[in-house]
Length: 150
Ligand code: FES
Image (cartoon, rainbow, N blue to C red; front, side, top):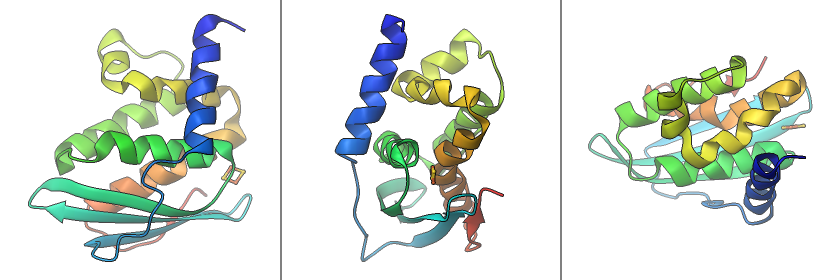
């Protein structure tokens, strides 16, 4: 295993063990339910907005290590970001999970989130990593629809 893969693995293990923002928000403006029907795992995403900014964000649910780590990393990254920045990041993460190569600009934008890039080698895991991001996109688009990875 390369040093970079080692580092990526560490990041994912850390976020799975100590998920950031693992909390329900009582005063959330948007609450989105997500499910991965393949395994039955569930996620609820809470977003509190202040104008066009994500003032606070939290999640609850059950999922595998990739799912929890991805949710945790997503919330850590977008807290304080604008709605547009969150949607832009969704697009880049989606490209990272769906395409093989990303350009330098996209990699710079991803930063630590690039730790999730190894997941694309395992198609069933892509859904685990995507769930929280689809929930984010739905929340930021002001939709109340629930999200499914199918
Ligand atoms: Fe269920 Fe990954 S196996 S979310």
